[in-house]
Amino acid sequence: MANENARPQRGTFLTVMTVLFVLLAISDFAKPIQFGHPNAAAGIVEFGRKFHGVMPNLILGTLFGILFLVYAYGLWNLRSWVLPIAIGYAFYVPYNVVLFTYREPPVIRSIPFIVIWLAVALTGSIGTAIYVAYNHQTLR
Amino acid sequence: MPNENSGASRGWFLTVMTVLFLLLALSDFTKALQFLGNPAVGGIVVFGHKFHGVAHNLILGPIFGIVFLIYAYGIWKLRAWILPLAFVYAFYVPYNLVLFWYTQAPGPRPIPFIVVYLAIALTGSIGTAIYLAYHRERLS
Image 1 (tube, rainbow over the protein chains, first blue to last red):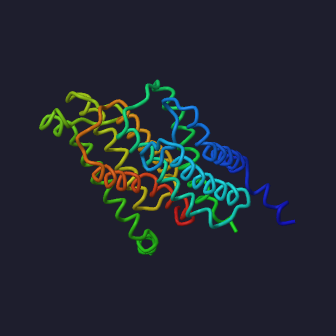
Image 2 (image 1 turned 30 degrees about the horizontal axis):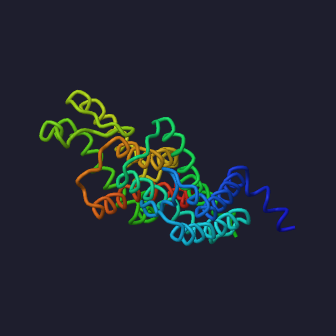
Image 3 (image 1 turned 60 degrees about the vertical axis):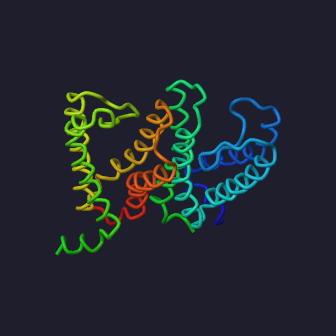
C-alpha cells in the first residue's frame, strides 16, 4: 500500500528527474570507457577540473555514479534524507560549472547550446532542490 | 503583534540576506558612478554581458536596484509573492556567472577568491530560494 501511495505523490517532475539521475549515473560509470575513445570533451569534470586518464575517471566516475544512484533511489522513494543531498548538489553544480568555465579554455560551443545545456543542468540541480524543499512534507 | 511575530520567524538567515540585497541594490543604483570611476572594471553584468557606457549602467543599474529592493522588502515582510522571484533569481545568478566567464579570457583573480565569491553569490541566490521554499508556511 505504501508503494502505491508513493507514486502519485512523487509527481511528473521528480519521476523525470529520477530517470535523468539514473542516466547520469550510467554516464559516470562509463567515464573510463568514454575516455578510451578520447576527444576534446572526454574526461569527468569535478570541482571545476577535468580529469584525464583512465584511473581518475574510473575512481571518480564510480563514486559519482553511486552517489547519483543513491540520490535517484531517494527521490523515487521520497525519502527525507535526499534533502541534504539535493541542497548539496544544488550548490555543487553551479560551483563545478563556473569553476570549470573560469579555469579551462572553453571548448567552442554556441551560446544557445550553453543556454540549453545550463537549463537542463540547473533544473536537475537547483530545480530539484527547490522542489524537494518546497514539498518536504511529502518526504518520509 | 504580527510584526513582532514576523521578526521572530524571519530568523537570522533571512535578516542577513535582506541586508545583503539592500547592499546589492545600493551597488546597482551606483553602477554608473562605478563605471565612471573605473571603466576597465566597472559596468553591470546582465545575462553574462558586461555593459559599458554610462547610459547603459544608468538604465540597467536602477532597474536591477529596484528589483533587489522589492526582493529585500518581500523577504523582510515574509511575503508569499517573493517565492517566484527567489526561484528565478536562483537560476539567474549561475546563468549570469557561467555566460560571463564563458565569454571572458581567464581573469587575474585567484581560485580561492572565486570560491569565496561563489559561496556568497550562490548562498544569496540558491540558498535563499531553498530556505524560502522549505519555510513557505511562514510566508503570508
